Image (cartoon, rainbow, N blue to C red):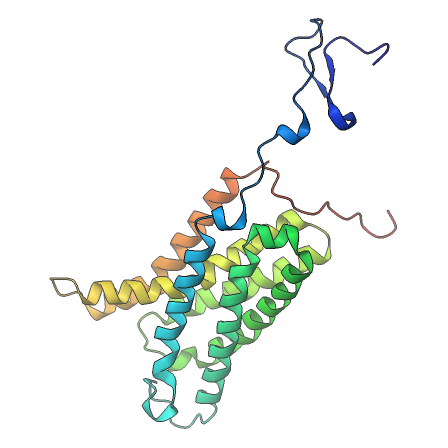
Amino acid sequence: MNGSMPGLVEQEETTVTLDTRNAGAQARPAAPLHAAAARPRWWRRPWIVPLMVVVAAYLIYQISPYVPESKAPTPPHDGFPAYYPLLVVHMVSGTLAIISACFQVWPWLRRRHPAVHRASGRVYVLGAVVGGTCGLIIVRFAPPVGQIGVAAATTLWIVFTVAAVVYARKGRYDLHRRFMLYSFAIIMNNIWGVLIVNVLMRMPWEVGFTYMLEAARWTGWVFNLILVQWWLYHTEGRDIGLPRRRRPVGS
C-alpha cells in the first residue's frame, strides 16, 4: 500500500491489522485468511451425539411408566380430574422442549441452517412455556419433599426462556444466547434428577428419602447453572458466529 503508516500490515482479502509491537519495522506478509484453523465438522464434536443419546434414553425411561394411566405412578389427586390431562400435556411439551434444546445448542446447525435453528427455537419456547405452566399447576400434588426445588426450577425455566425470546426480538443475540443457555441448564436438570435418585438408591448404605429427593430437586439445576456461567466466562470475546446486533428502529 502506497503511503502506508509504519506497522500497518496488509492481509489478503483487504483485511488490515495494526502491528503495534513491531511498529517501524519492515512489513511482512501476513498469513492468508484461509490458513486460519477451520471449524470442526459436526461429527468431530464429541458432545452433540452423546447428548442426544442421553436425552433419548431419559425420555424412554421416564415416560414409559406413565402409559397407560391405570399403571401410572401418580400421587393422589382426588378432586382434581384435570391432573392426568395436564400431566400428559406437561410430558409432551417437555419432550418437545428437551429434544429441540439439543438442536438449539448445536453450533453447526445454528451457523449452517439458521432457519432450522429458529424453527426449533420456537418449538422449544412453546414446550417450555406450556410444559412449565402445566408443571406449576400440578406440582402441588408432588411429594412435599422437594416441592420448593421443583417450583423454583420450573419458574426459572419459564423466566429464562421468555427473557431469551425478548432479547432475540431486540436483536441482542449475545443476551439471547446467555438466557437460552440458562434455560438449557434448567431443563437438563431432569436428567440429573433421575441419575441422582437411581445412584443413591443403589448405595451400599441407606440414604434417607428426604435427603435423596431434595438432592434430586436442587443439585442438578444449580450445578448446571454454575457450569453454564463458567462456560459464558470462558467463551467471552470468542467469535461463535452470532448474528450482528440489530439497530433499534428509527436509529
